[in-house]
Amino acid sequence: MAGQPSFFDLSDRYEALSAAGDPLERLAAVVDFEAFRGPLVAALRRSVRGKGGRPPFDPVLMFKILAAGALLAV
Image 1: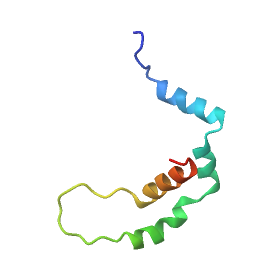
Image 2: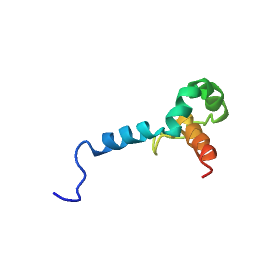
Image 3: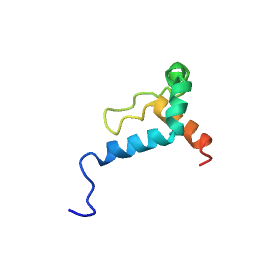
């Protein structure tokens, strides 16, 4: 099946990025993002209004996205 990604295509791409020196892997090795969880949760405290709706994204994940965007000048 030409043109169709294989089952291991994503893991092969991750290995190629790691071999090329992925800057996000280096950032994760240097910075302990979990140390920011306490201040982020305190700053983003929300009141519980109802049981419906999508749960909020993880604050550490959002902080990682902002840090990666600043690093890569996005």
